[in-house]
Length: 537
Image (tube, rainbow, N blue to C red; front, side, top):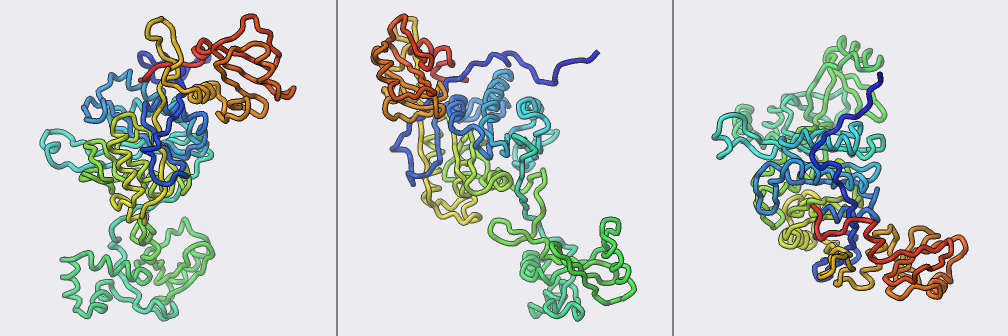
């Protein structure tokens, strides 16, 4: 008998979901900063409501989403309530991740930062929403060292947390090639004295001999100097990377027959250098049956300079998050991530001009780094740190702040952002009667924009219409009394193949409607569309 079902994580309240009201954004022009033509958005408000509000304009358009949600470890952060009951935390994450999945571009990437306490739960949850086939990597991020008070207790010292990487559609996912800096490879200990001469005339020495010769000292002194100051030999190697070499035996099982034949010939021609040019690949030089490998081929362009590098792995142990202190000009104890971490995330998954989202913006690191790297960004933050941290930090970035990655990306300031508040709920409880009413703080324009958003219409007031959902479907909102004459006047410009949705507060009963006209009542019909509440958790 065939069994049905699926692997999933369950918890109390998993399916107790509500359709969240997609609020409108209200720009605070006094807090917006820099170039008014910028498309960047800093949003203050509940991130679940904000994510729902972003769907209409940004679904399928965001190239990279990085989030660093509360870890639910039981620790009390000053700026986050991280002490959530497990089921509540899982519900919080599921609701947001479903919206994030909708916002992500088909070739986009999601990065979720998490600790080991909830890594297993989160991975199963992400597999359910994004599908296991779209799981890319589990990055191990070394955030500190085994020092200080945490090293006193017996057992293991926790020095790492994790970043789960998922693609929206792995078949369309194309990452960038990223390299990380590494120390000098000491195996490269030989030197071509006359590298500019024809290769047949090359002469060789040890690396230490070459260093001594250039500096006019004895080999003995060179050995002592480089032992006391290893940075000197490192600088010498980088300066002469086209002359510093090592030799290695080719893997005969993984090279073509032409190379195999040349290797065998090289073994019989002691001391000679044999050469094989290759189009699209490094040329091959052989001596005594071994290939000459040049240090220059190990150099990678990292943070504005050519240095020793290697391909990025899933162990990120070269970016410590301790000693951040006031990076970005704001303090955020225990919650701040280093700018170089976000730089790596964006280098791997985006290009200049791509759109980046962080819905747990915290101290503003993701937005700051995206800004410096020429990416467009949207940041959402619920707490007061939207004002005290994010805005302060981003203003400084626009003014040319030189901390974090600024020097690595040659940042000198510019561009800007728009600061938005999430509007209050469109419908609120009547102060006396047991009914819902339109929020008295809403202007008529806000009412029209909010209804358009709830109904899925683009708010573009023009003439009698307040928005459209297609070339043939329009919406009109009014506080006037709606009767046959009113409908006739409003729909006068409609063609036979176009339709109109009308929202109003006062509607004639038993109203006859043409087939292409639909009338809905405020607030009754709005209550059927979504859940209205001042805050959603």
